[in-house]
Length: 385
Image (cartoon, rainbow, N blue to C red; front, side, top):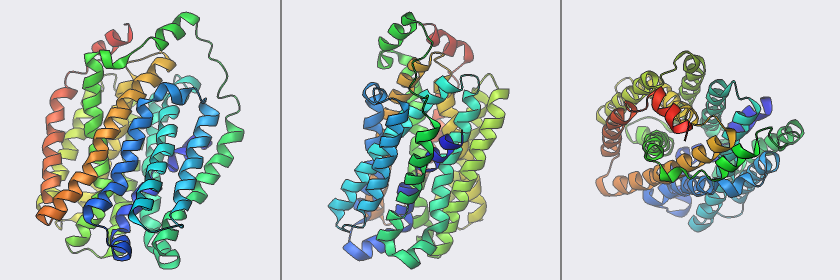
């Protein structure tokens, strides 16, 4: 379990640190805001493509696959030392997305296989660690930038990935052991094509909203607050506070989810809170900004794991759950990955990001209609197919 949590901690620092280094990167190579947006968009889209290829990823096995994913993440971070040219930065960002995508495709199935009676608890904790990695990167960015410059600040996170590999490999020697499921179940899972079901696309839509809320915030909340008048180091601590609040939201879900068989109550609560906070940030960013960061983090931190838990509720078989989660995450990350680029284009065109926050709030509020349809009975019917 400790290895699992350390793996989760590795999945966001290489992405979260970009927004806090925007000014330094632009001063070094003259990249536009749109190009800066690609540094978050490209890895997110790579994560989506890997998730879509979930069947191929699963052939690596849990133990080897997670180690390969972490190794790619470490290599992409170290590659930042080699050059500061835009194309090189984007290429290494794609490598980071591929590594993170491999890990994210495998871990839900691993949890479902190893801890079948603690899925909601461990998914909440695992996602909390993902958010915690972003918080760690945000809180330390200012100090690292002072000592290592921006290339070294990006490369530093290879250390955490190497530590993750060192703990994961000896802890997961049994992870690729064959399951005790029957050959009938295996055949059913291999024949499962999630894209053929309407319910899958409803889950995809909900995860698209969840991932978009997260990636838009990850890429642009710090630069937006700096443009509103916040100092660079304070913006870093604001992003850290937001990320730590996301961790708190994940822990809250870990505690609440087992107590709510009908997930719609919690899902609606987090969707409504996220939409409201996005409106406030777009309209009045300097009105109680620390409070808004904490509220937004708590909302997104609860929304993200709740959507994943909801997806896993639809499949009792680990292999089938892994296929469904991979597909949903794949499409969700492809869509969510577009948002940082689009927001950067808006910033270059309009001159600020207020429009992006308000538009995201409207989309999130509209998702309440979809959330109302995901009843426990409908999830059980989908599982029985």
